[in-house]
Image 1 (cartoon, rainbow, N blue to C red):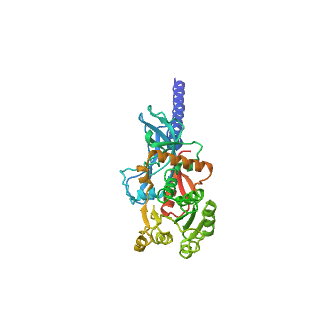
Image 2: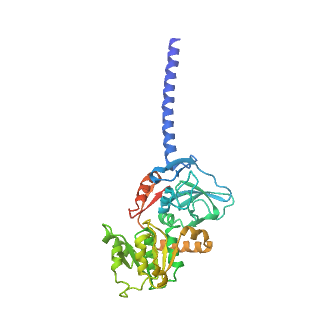
Image 3: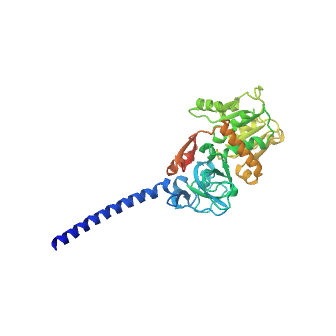
Length: 377
């Protein structure tokens, strides 16, 4: 009898210890499973960045876990592959942009993703297709999105992810500003400031492709010779510092025709210097204000040179443009990237877990490289 009791007690202790170890192992596996983004969709979980108030992006943006949404009959579920950190994203989080959000809000203005599920009425897209949203500020800093089939565009899976991710903002901005305000022909001249910016580099590449002279203005910095050479390699006709622009005889000597078009994303004194170089009846297009200084318009420029001053927002253009023209332009830009006629500006890719690094550098705006969130590989 004693032996039987001892035997039963021993078996009980062994089984209990085994169950305890199993429970610890299960908890360990589950914790790693749930916290690992690569398994989120399998577990029906997604990650996204949110902010609940305006402020310093480093302080107010947080990463949260949510349930993966289900597409309706006219929607697709997209696994977001990559999304850039644009200046507009930083400004929206800071509350400095004229687009107000409902909290909690997800940042992110453009992205490329892969279709992983389609609604029953969706025929033009299938699982595995790469797509981009055709509307801005949808909240793309997330692992998964549900999007109406009417606002997405299929892009070639062979188009590199980074090029696809930035396709909606800077390339159309550069394209439209060169096409929509002045009828430029081969041999004409365009002048721009912030030529080393992401958009500026695309502008000078398009100018080269279309046979247009580009005069590219940049700030003085320690690596100025290296930067000048980099921009010339991309296709810049001339690269000048702001100080060199004031004293150059490029236009007086007839080395190049006076510019018919000036593209300004800085404002302040920099835009005034561009204005002084414009030809009679020229046009100055402002599409940014990096200096946070106003564009000052001399009366003489209006009366004696008949200069036109206009603004450009690709967001507004996108909302009002003819869908067929937008689609045609995007297809042309895709071909330019795939043929090597356009090269994406330098960028650094970081995972969603490292979003703080991208926000910190984005605030400084001095890295010379765009940050792209690599959300799903």
